Length: 404
Picture 1 (cartoon, rainbow, N blue to C red):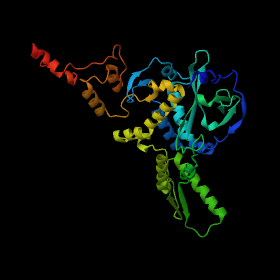
Picture 2 (cartoon, rainbow, N blue to C red; picture 1 turned 45 degrees about the vertical axis):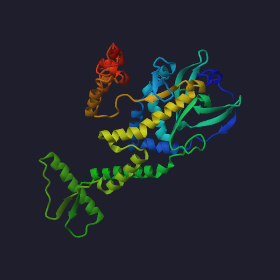
Picture 3 (cartoon, helix red, strand yellow; picture 1 turned 90 degrees about the horizontal axis):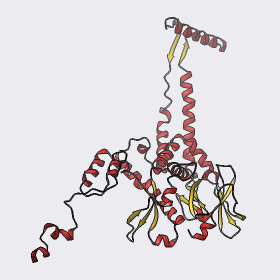
Picture 4 (cartoon, rainbow, N blue to C red; picture 1 turned 90 degrees about the vertical axis):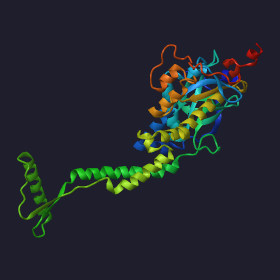
């Protein structure tokens, strides 16, 4: 962003607020009913937690790339990299990324903003805006646009400039600022809620009704049937205290009931669950931790990495001017160790890179889950490798040697 835009950036809570002229757009409350239903569903919450946990394992970094889009420098001391180590007084980096991913799945968009220090013109905080609270795009007094929202931190309304806002979106059709709502899955959520309710009801019946008592007498009146029932229950209670044997006379017959509350809805339950896993593009095996290596890799390639890329691009546009971007400055979100790779795969990676020096000692230790060591950021490589164009000199067979 430009210096002027930074100087006109949003004031932190408790200071001067932006002056609003009139409302411009007000359409961000559309997903609330869906959001409520999702957060009531244990399956949906498990899916959202799975996606958010893995997304939050990414590391936000300021890097410099060359014209070929290759990283030539990781700026770990950059204020932009440090910003995401402790993004605000209330959240860790993990918390921030987790919240953004949760909001993205919950409402099909996630939104956050940068709080700028107007004295140093450096960012001092990153905050998410709860999508479930909704927001309104407003026209500010200087002719620019702002985002008006209700903060969960102080329960008051605030306005931040659009130039200080970043947004992640799913299913975005390019119409308007926010994406389409998620009501297409509302029927599936309603079916699941009905199934859950029926299971609870049938479970209660199963636990309370244990059998049928048949009287081999002539048609009994309601009063006589009730009396016979009470007498039988009394005998069962007495038997539970005195030997455990219930005596029946020749005119009585008892049939034990074994009700299975799951069987009636099993196929329907599985169908509904598959639809939810498919809608959120998250395999059930990834959620319950039984996925194989290829499934996990496909999941990262198809869901997590695109979100990292989306966030990196959004932050790059927000934090750097066009000229700074031309010099290769970018924000990226990078994964740590080889995502979900098996021990066999990790050992193959270590074995194939031991002589070529692609990984530092600490990177190799990180792959195994070990803590870094002092001096472990050095790259070690074998002396058996050299540049291809220097092979003759390395072997002592170059032109210089022949002339001697």
